Image (cartoon, rainbow, N blue to C red; front, side):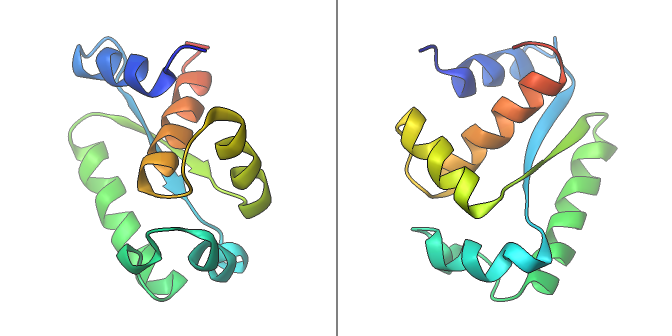
Length: 109
C-alpha cells in the first residue's frame, strides 16, 4: 500500500494542495483518547485545554492560506485504522490519519 502520509506531505510541500489534515477530538471521546494514546503525556489533560490549543493552531494554519480539514478521531475506529495500516497509536498515527482524511476530502484518493 502506498504511504499516503508521505505522498500527501510531498503534495502539500509543493503547494499543489492547499489543505492540511488536523486530528480532532470530541469532548465525549477525550478521556478514552488519553487512555489509548502511547504518547498521552504530550496531550493536554482536559478537552477544554486541548480545544483552546487546537483552535489556535488551526487558526494559525488558516492564516497561512491553508484549508484545514478536521479529522475526527473516534477511539475504536482509530485503533482499527492504525492496526490495518501498521501505525502506532501516537502522534505519527494521528498525523497519518489526519493526512489521509485531508487527501480524501481533497479528492486525491
